[in-house]
Image (cartoon, rainbow, N blue to C red; front, side, top):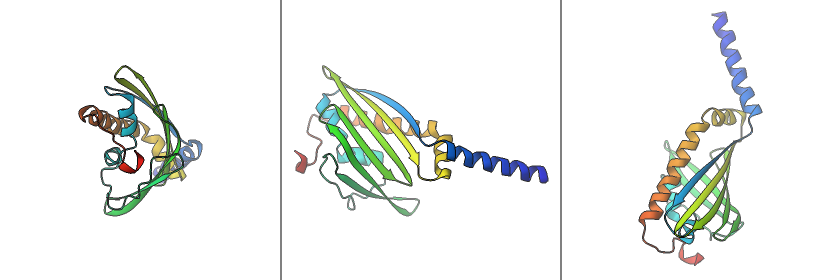
Length: 178
């Protein structure tokens, strides 16, 4: 019994040490979308993308601002019968070339940098994301599950790719941003 107690304490110490040492995880995802660059770029500012990222969003509670540098969109959703919220701030944008978002929610902060390049009607999107937890426990969990987190994000971006490619050409942006 004593050996099990010592082993349990050592595992706890290792777990918390991991959370103190690891500050954030970083990964890169690359997509090739068969669509003009404007269509691909605008899709990231669309309400459709928000619903792909956060399927439990309540659209009635979303406080969406124009997709301009410095503006923040607030989203509320329900997860496991608990109401949660996320804020997404446009940190920097260079029309049709670069977009940087800061997403704050679920006790974590994600920075997404999206680089858009095109060749004819194929748009290449390189997404660099940094994810950090606010607590040592959360940083440990993020570190331990980083491959699953990256796979989940790849699935979301691939759904957006499919959505862009299957949607007729139209302006994704809300009316107030046109």
